[in-house]
Image (cartoon, rainbow over all chains, first blue to last red; front, top):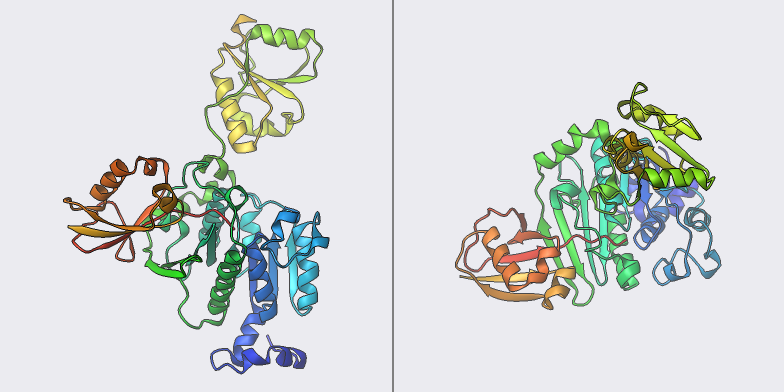
Length: 367
Length: 78
């Protein structure tokens, strides 16, 4: 991708470098980098990649700028508070360098959109703030074959690495299992020193640029740790685990239905919070409450519920009926003895994020 | 034998130390993990990986006198 005269002038200090030159700057112009999250890490990553002349930068973040972000997210100003982060970022970054193409995704990264978004880019940079998304990003990078530049921070300490690059390890080779939910607090719980994400994010930008330019030694197979209080850097070797990689590859067909919140313990299984007995169901009818009954039995099973809003959705065909199961009102799931309905609720909660389901305890036999 | 231990993130906070020397009679990372969890029960609920002489190490790896061992927790923050 040839540079214009304007670009040659703008990127002159890169072009002067033996290891970059015109050819390297053209590689930067041709590169497409996706940044996940416009937070403490994402902001400096975006600012340096924009300045460096990376041709296309994607940014996904569903959040808005909060006043408490401004202590470290120096891309944003006081006037941006309340604006969508992707919109505020695009506005600032376009002013910084109008020669860069910005694609913004004001949405949550999910198993439904990750693969199609990732496939449009050459490199993914992780600036997220929770384990569910970190595992999701890692697995999506393994499945789509994209290198992942990882950064993570805690109070005064940071970690940087490059995963899934030229046969190197992935995040799961370093941390195969997520920590127990709630055992690792986030910046919003325990605070973070403002400069730290600037240092770690800048290193992530540097790693991405090295990968694009194919220069130096990217942090693949290495985890670098930094402590801002005593300036201790440590470099650790991380080995690729074929077992972990194969697990992701073998499960790739199920990626879109895998529940990362459940995997990371954010959501609990087997805790059906709400159950009612037949008397409770009769009471709902008597009070004239607007609710739906989902009967997961076969059509031949008796007795049937004849009144109200009843959907017949046999358990083994449940997926086909999901679009007809209400999310905006109470839904009582029923079967003969309350066992299949419990399984149906688990499936709906884990795979389709339902939170309005009530199990008919003991089943309809007592109707 | 004496090992040099380094603690990071919430591990360092949970046991209120960033490093220390520990004397151990056993041979593997798993032995060390058991000893540390008896010494610091607060480690039981925390997730971490061991690095033996700057390389991530599994539980069955053999340790020897003078080894440097780091306990690395995952960080969520961004």
